[in-house]
Length: 350
Image (cartoon, rainbow, N blue to C red):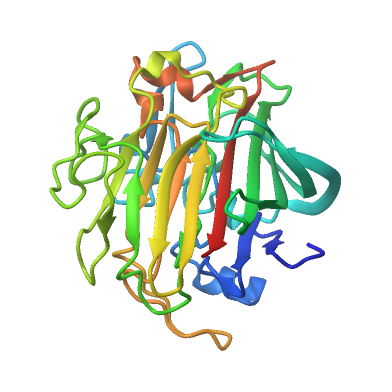
Protein backbone atom coordinates (compact mmCIF):
# COMPACT_ATOMS: atom_id res chain seq x y z
CA UNK A 1 0.00 0.00 0.00
CA UNK A 2 1.21 3.50 -0.78
CA UNK A 3 1.17 4.77 2.81
CA UNK A 4 2.54 1.51 4.26
CA UNK A 5 -0.23 1.17 6.84
CA UNK A 6 -0.58 -2.50 5.91
CA UNK A 7 1.11 -5.11 3.75
CA UNK A 8 -0.12 -8.37 2.26
CA UNK A 9 1.46 -11.35 0.48
CA UNK A 10 0.05 -13.84 -2.07
CA UNK A 11 0.67 -16.89 0.13
CA UNK A 12 -2.59 -17.31 2.00
CA UNK A 13 -3.60 -13.74 1.05
CA UNK A 14 -1.86 -13.05 4.36
CA UNK A 15 -1.99 -9.82 6.33
CA UNK A 16 1.75 -9.36 6.91
CA UNK A 17 1.66 -6.08 8.82
CA UNK A 18 -0.73 -3.49 10.21
CA UNK A 19 0.93 -0.36 11.60
CA UNK A 20 -0.50 1.94 14.24
CA UNK A 21 1.69 4.93 15.19
CA UNK A 22 4.82 3.03 14.14
CA UNK A 23 3.93 -0.26 15.88
CA UNK A 24 3.09 -3.36 13.85
CA UNK A 25 0.19 -4.86 15.80
CA UNK A 26 0.02 -8.22 13.95
CA UNK A 27 2.46 -11.11 14.24
CA UNK A 28 4.22 -12.19 11.07
CA UNK A 29 7.47 -12.70 9.17
CA UNK A 30 9.52 -10.46 6.86
CA UNK A 31 9.51 -12.94 3.94
CA UNK A 32 7.09 -15.32 2.24
CA UNK A 33 9.71 -18.05 2.54
CA UNK A 34 9.58 -17.79 6.35
CA UNK A 35 5.81 -18.18 6.28
CA UNK A 36 6.22 -21.32 4.16
CA UNK A 37 8.60 -22.92 6.66
CA UNK A 38 7.44 -21.61 10.05
CA UNK A 39 3.77 -20.60 9.97
CA UNK A 40 2.23 -23.56 11.78
CA UNK A 41 0.21 -21.03 13.82
CA UNK A 42 -1.54 -19.51 10.77
CA UNK A 43 -0.21 -15.95 11.32
CA UNK A 44 -2.36 -13.58 9.20
CA UNK A 45 -3.78 -16.30 6.96
CA UNK A 46 -7.03 -16.27 5.03
CA UNK A 47 -8.71 -19.41 6.35
CA UNK A 48 -10.91 -21.69 4.21
CA UNK A 49 -12.73 -23.58 2.99
CA UNK A 50 -14.00 -24.02 6.51
CA UNK A 51 -12.51 -22.14 9.43
CA UNK A 52 -12.24 -23.89 12.79
CA UNK A 53 -13.07 -27.59 13.17
CA UNK A 54 -15.20 -30.11 11.30
CA UNK A 55 -16.10 -33.09 13.46
CA UNK A 56 -14.42 -36.36 12.52
CA UNK A 57 -12.99 -34.73 9.37
CA UNK A 58 -16.25 -35.59 7.65
CA UNK A 59 -19.18 -33.75 6.12
CA UNK A 60 -22.10 -36.01 6.98
CA UNK A 61 -24.54 -35.06 4.24
CA UNK A 62 -24.40 -32.84 1.14
CA UNK A 63 -25.63 -33.10 -2.45
CA UNK A 64 -28.50 -35.47 -1.85
CA UNK A 65 -27.15 -37.28 1.19
CA UNK A 66 -23.55 -37.89 0.13
CA UNK A 67 -20.86 -37.83 2.81
CA UNK A 68 -17.36 -36.46 2.24
CA UNK A 69 -14.16 -37.47 4.01
CA UNK A 70 -11.86 -34.51 4.67
CA UNK A 71 -8.18 -34.26 5.59
CA UNK A 72 -7.76 -34.94 9.33
CA UNK A 73 -5.12 -32.51 10.62
CA UNK A 74 -6.24 -31.86 14.20
CA UNK A 75 -6.57 -35.23 15.89
CA UNK A 76 -9.64 -36.83 14.30
CA UNK A 77 -10.96 -33.48 13.07
CA UNK A 78 -10.41 -31.17 10.12
CA UNK A 79 -8.99 -27.78 11.16
CA UNK A 80 -8.89 -24.56 9.10
CA UNK A 81 -9.46 -26.33 5.78
CA UNK A 82 -7.00 -29.20 6.17
CA UNK A 83 -3.30 -29.89 5.74
CA UNK A 84 -3.02 -27.39 2.89
CA UNK A 85 -5.96 -25.11 3.54
CA UNK A 86 -6.47 -21.82 1.74
CA UNK A 87 -4.05 -20.10 4.11
CA UNK A 88 -1.25 -22.33 2.76
CA UNK A 89 -2.02 -21.77 -0.93
CA UNK A 90 -0.69 -19.01 -3.19
CA UNK A 91 -3.46 -16.64 -4.28
CA UNK A 92 -3.54 -14.53 -7.43
CA UNK A 93 -2.84 -10.93 -6.39
CA UNK A 94 -2.64 -8.38 -5.02
CA UNK A 95 -4.59 -6.74 -7.83
CA UNK A 96 -5.52 -3.05 -7.35
CA UNK A 97 -9.30 -2.57 -7.50
CA UNK A 98 -9.51 1.17 -6.96
CA UNK A 99 -10.96 3.07 -4.04
CA UNK A 100 -13.70 1.45 -1.97
CA UNK A 101 -15.67 2.82 0.95
CA UNK A 102 -15.36 1.52 4.48
CA UNK A 103 -18.98 0.70 5.40
CA UNK A 104 -20.70 2.14 8.43
CA UNK A 105 -20.20 0.13 11.62
CA UNK A 106 -21.87 -0.13 15.01
CA UNK A 107 -21.74 3.28 16.66
CA UNK A 108 -21.16 5.13 13.37
CA UNK A 109 -24.10 5.85 11.09
CA UNK A 110 -22.29 6.94 7.93
CA UNK A 111 -19.69 5.39 5.67
CA UNK A 112 -16.04 6.42 5.84
CA UNK A 113 -14.14 7.89 2.91
CA UNK A 114 -12.76 5.27 0.59
CA UNK A 115 -9.30 3.80 0.75
CA UNK A 116 -6.92 2.00 -1.54
CA UNK A 117 -8.10 -1.57 -2.17
CA UNK A 118 -6.48 -4.75 -3.46
CA UNK A 119 -8.00 -8.12 -4.34
CA UNK A 120 -6.70 -11.67 -4.06
CA UNK A 121 -8.37 -14.58 -5.89
CA UNK A 122 -8.10 -18.35 -5.45
CA UNK A 123 -9.71 -21.21 -7.37
CA UNK A 124 -10.13 -24.27 -5.15
CA UNK A 125 -10.69 -27.43 -7.17
CA UNK A 126 -13.35 -30.06 -6.51
CA UNK A 127 -11.95 -32.44 -3.88
CA UNK A 128 -9.50 -29.92 -2.42
CA UNK A 129 -8.63 -31.40 1.01
CA UNK A 130 -11.78 -33.52 0.54
CA UNK A 131 -14.27 -30.66 0.13
CA UNK A 132 -16.74 -30.99 -2.76
CA UNK A 133 -17.14 -28.54 -5.62
CA UNK A 134 -14.93 -26.16 -7.54
CA UNK A 135 -14.99 -22.79 -5.78
CA UNK A 136 -13.65 -19.34 -6.60
CA UNK A 137 -12.87 -17.25 -3.54
CA UNK A 138 -11.99 -13.57 -3.35
CA UNK A 139 -10.56 -11.35 -0.62
CA UNK A 140 -10.60 -7.56 -0.88
CA UNK A 141 -8.53 -5.50 1.55
CA UNK A 142 -9.27 -1.79 1.94
CA UNK A 143 -6.98 0.50 3.95
CA UNK A 144 -8.15 3.91 5.09
CA UNK A 145 -7.88 6.45 7.88
CA UNK A 146 -10.54 8.18 9.95
CA UNK A 147 -10.32 11.37 12.00
CA UNK A 148 -12.42 10.70 15.06
CA UNK A 149 -14.44 13.17 17.11
CA UNK A 150 -11.65 12.99 19.67
CA UNK A 151 -9.21 14.27 17.05
CA UNK A 152 -7.28 11.00 16.97
CA UNK A 153 -6.40 9.50 13.60
CA UNK A 154 -7.67 5.93 13.37
CA UNK A 155 -6.27 3.26 11.06
CA UNK A 156 -8.90 1.15 9.30
CA UNK A 157 -8.45 -2.18 7.54
CA UNK A 158 -11.58 -3.58 5.92
CA UNK A 159 -11.83 -7.17 4.71
CA UNK A 160 -14.50 -8.45 2.34
CA UNK A 161 -14.83 -12.15 1.51
CA UNK A 162 -16.77 -13.63 -1.39
CA UNK A 163 -17.00 -17.18 -2.76
CA UNK A 164 -19.10 -18.96 -5.33
CA UNK A 165 -19.51 -22.49 -6.61
CA UNK A 166 -18.36 -22.83 -10.21
CA UNK A 167 -19.86 -25.06 -12.91
CA UNK A 168 -19.61 -28.76 -12.23
CA UNK A 169 -21.62 -31.75 -11.07
CA UNK A 170 -21.77 -30.61 -7.45
CA UNK A 171 -24.80 -28.49 -6.50
CA UNK A 172 -23.68 -27.40 -3.02
CA UNK A 173 -20.67 -27.14 -0.74
CA UNK A 174 -19.78 -25.52 2.59
CA UNK A 175 -17.82 -22.30 3.20
CA UNK A 176 -16.65 -20.47 6.34
CA UNK A 177 -13.86 -17.94 5.76
CA UNK A 178 -12.00 -15.76 8.25
CA UNK A 179 -8.65 -14.11 8.93
CA UNK A 180 -6.27 -15.62 11.48
CA UNK A 181 -4.21 -12.58 12.49
CA UNK A 182 -2.62 -12.54 15.94
CA UNK A 183 -2.61 -9.14 17.61
CA UNK A 184 -0.06 -7.67 20.01
CA UNK A 185 -0.62 -4.02 20.87
CA UNK A 186 2.89 -3.30 22.18
CA UNK A 187 5.14 -5.14 19.73
CA UNK A 188 6.64 -6.85 22.79
CA UNK A 189 6.99 -10.54 23.68
CA UNK A 190 3.66 -10.94 25.51
CA UNK A 191 0.02 -9.85 25.49
CA UNK A 192 0.10 -9.59 29.29
CA UNK A 193 -1.62 -6.42 30.49
CA UNK A 194 -3.94 -6.14 27.47
CA UNK A 195 -7.45 -5.09 28.51
CA UNK A 196 -10.08 -7.01 26.55
CA UNK A 197 -13.82 -6.45 26.16
CA UNK A 198 -15.84 -9.12 24.33
CA UNK A 199 -19.25 -8.25 22.94
CA UNK A 200 -20.88 -11.35 24.42
CA UNK A 201 -20.34 -14.05 27.01
CA UNK A 202 -22.45 -16.61 25.13
CA UNK A 203 -20.30 -19.40 23.73
CA UNK A 204 -20.45 -22.93 22.35
CA UNK A 205 -19.38 -25.55 24.92
CA UNK A 206 -17.04 -28.10 23.35
CA UNK A 207 -15.64 -31.57 23.89
CA UNK A 208 -11.92 -32.28 24.32
CA UNK A 209 -11.44 -32.05 20.55
CA UNK A 210 -12.99 -28.59 20.25
CA UNK A 211 -16.32 -29.75 18.77
CA UNK A 212 -19.51 -28.13 20.15
CA UNK A 213 -21.64 -30.31 22.40
CA UNK A 214 -24.66 -28.02 22.28
CA UNK A 215 -25.99 -24.55 21.68
CA UNK A 216 -24.90 -21.27 23.30
CA UNK A 217 -24.56 -21.00 27.09
CA UNK A 218 -22.92 -18.38 29.35
CA UNK A 219 -19.12 -18.57 29.43
CA UNK A 220 -17.99 -20.30 32.66
CA UNK A 221 -14.63 -18.59 33.21
CA UNK A 222 -15.20 -15.99 35.97
CA UNK A 223 -12.37 -13.80 34.65
CA UNK A 224 -14.39 -13.08 31.53
CA UNK A 225 -17.60 -12.34 33.49
CA UNK A 226 -20.37 -10.94 31.32
CA UNK A 227 -20.18 -9.56 27.81
CA UNK A 228 -19.05 -5.95 27.49
CA UNK A 229 -17.21 -5.98 30.83
CA UNK A 230 -13.41 -5.47 30.48
CA UNK A 231 -10.93 -8.02 31.79
CA UNK A 232 -7.13 -8.08 31.74
CA UNK A 233 -4.93 -10.75 30.18
CA UNK A 234 -2.31 -12.01 32.61
CA UNK A 235 0.90 -13.95 32.01
CA UNK A 236 -0.98 -17.24 31.69
CA UNK A 237 -4.66 -16.61 32.49
CA UNK A 238 -7.36 -16.43 31.44
CA UNK A 239 -6.58 -19.15 28.90
CA UNK A 240 -9.28 -18.89 26.22
CA UNK A 241 -9.83 -20.66 22.89
CA UNK A 242 -13.58 -20.64 22.34
CA UNK A 243 -16.30 -19.67 19.90
CA UNK A 244 -18.44 -16.80 21.20
CA UNK A 245 -21.91 -16.25 19.75
CA UNK A 246 -23.17 -12.87 18.52
CA UNK A 247 -26.35 -14.10 16.82
CA UNK A 248 -28.04 -16.81 18.89
CA UNK A 249 -30.51 -17.75 16.13
CA UNK A 250 -28.50 -19.84 13.66
CA UNK A 251 -31.47 -20.25 11.32
CA UNK A 252 -31.51 -16.47 10.70
CA UNK A 253 -27.92 -16.32 9.38
CA UNK A 254 -27.76 -15.99 5.57
CA UNK A 255 -24.94 -17.50 3.52
CA UNK A 256 -24.01 -13.92 2.55
CA UNK A 257 -23.92 -11.66 5.62
CA UNK A 258 -22.52 -8.60 3.82
CA UNK A 259 -25.85 -6.76 3.92
CA UNK A 260 -25.97 -7.04 7.71
CA UNK A 261 -24.53 -4.34 10.00
CA UNK A 262 -20.94 -4.51 11.16
CA UNK A 263 -21.18 -5.26 14.88
CA UNK A 264 -18.36 -4.88 17.38
CA UNK A 265 -16.88 -8.21 18.47
CA UNK A 266 -13.94 -7.00 20.55
CA UNK A 267 -12.28 -3.95 22.04
CA UNK A 268 -8.66 -4.15 23.21
CA UNK A 269 -6.34 -1.63 24.84
CA UNK A 270 -2.84 -1.75 26.29
CA UNK A 271 -1.96 0.90 28.87
CA UNK A 272 1.76 0.69 28.04
CA UNK A 273 1.52 1.43 24.31
CA UNK A 274 -1.79 3.37 24.57
CA UNK A 275 -2.96 1.53 21.45
CA UNK A 276 -6.61 0.64 21.01
CA UNK A 277 -8.02 -2.03 18.68
CA UNK A 278 -11.63 -2.70 17.75
CA UNK A 279 -12.83 -5.60 15.59
CA UNK A 280 -16.22 -5.50 13.87
CA UNK A 281 -17.88 -8.07 11.63
CA UNK A 282 -21.12 -9.11 9.97
CA UNK A 283 -20.65 -12.66 11.25
CA UNK A 284 -22.76 -14.55 13.83
CA UNK A 285 -19.79 -15.73 15.92
CA UNK A 286 -16.10 -15.25 16.63
CA UNK A 287 -13.30 -17.40 18.00
CA UNK A 288 -11.23 -15.70 20.69
CA UNK A 289 -7.85 -17.33 21.35
CA UNK A 290 -5.16 -16.18 23.75
CA UNK A 291 -2.29 -17.93 21.96
CA UNK A 292 -1.42 -20.75 24.35
CA UNK A 293 0.17 -22.91 21.66
CA UNK A 294 2.32 -20.33 19.84
CA UNK A 295 5.86 -21.68 19.56
CA UNK A 296 7.81 -20.09 16.70
CA UNK A 297 11.63 -19.92 16.73
CA UNK A 298 13.60 -16.82 15.82
CA UNK A 299 13.66 -16.47 12.03
CA UNK A 300 14.66 -13.76 9.53
CA UNK A 301 15.86 -11.52 12.34
CA UNK A 302 12.53 -11.67 14.17
CA UNK A 303 12.71 -12.88 17.80
CA UNK A 304 11.07 -16.14 18.81
CA UNK A 305 7.33 -15.99 19.47
CA UNK A 306 6.22 -17.97 22.50
CA UNK A 307 2.84 -18.75 24.13
CA UNK A 308 0.65 -15.65 24.58
CA UNK A 309 2.73 -13.50 22.29
CA UNK A 310 -0.48 -12.64 20.45
CA UNK A 311 -4.26 -13.06 20.65
CA UNK A 312 -6.70 -13.92 17.87
CA UNK A 313 -10.17 -12.71 17.07
CA UNK A 314 -11.63 -14.75 14.18
CA UNK A 315 -15.14 -13.72 13.05
CA UNK A 316 -16.90 -16.75 11.59
CA UNK A 317 -19.90 -19.04 11.43
CA UNK A 318 -20.73 -21.47 14.24
CA UNK A 319 -18.18 -24.27 14.67
CA UNK A 320 -19.04 -27.52 12.85
CA UNK A 321 -22.29 -26.00 11.58
CA UNK A 322 -22.00 -28.10 8.42
CA UNK A 323 -22.81 -31.22 10.49
CA UNK A 324 -25.61 -29.82 12.67
CA UNK A 325 -28.91 -29.69 10.74
CA UNK A 326 -30.26 -26.71 12.73
CA UNK A 327 -27.07 -24.71 12.10
CA UNK A 328 -26.15 -25.88 8.62
CA UNK A 329 -27.72 -23.14 6.50
CA UNK A 330 -25.16 -20.52 7.56
CA UNK A 331 -22.39 -22.52 5.82
CA UNK A 332 -24.33 -24.07 2.95
CA UNK A 333 -23.34 -22.54 -0.41
CA UNK A 334 -25.49 -23.59 -3.36
CA UNK A 335 -24.80 -23.11 -7.04
CA UNK A 336 -25.92 -19.67 -8.18
CA UNK A 337 -25.49 -18.13 -4.72
CA UNK A 338 -22.61 -16.21 -3.20
CA UNK A 339 -21.02 -16.61 0.19
CA UNK A 340 -19.87 -13.34 1.72
CA UNK A 341 -18.94 -11.50 4.91
CA UNK A 342 -17.14 -8.37 6.10
CA UNK A 343 -14.61 -7.70 8.85
CA UNK A 344 -13.20 -4.35 10.02
CA UNK A 345 -10.13 -3.64 12.13
CA UNK A 346 -10.04 -0.12 13.65
CA UNK A 347 -6.98 0.92 15.66
CA UNK A 348 -5.41 4.07 17.07
CA UNK A 349 -3.03 5.42 19.67
CA UNK A 350 -4.12 7.80 22.44
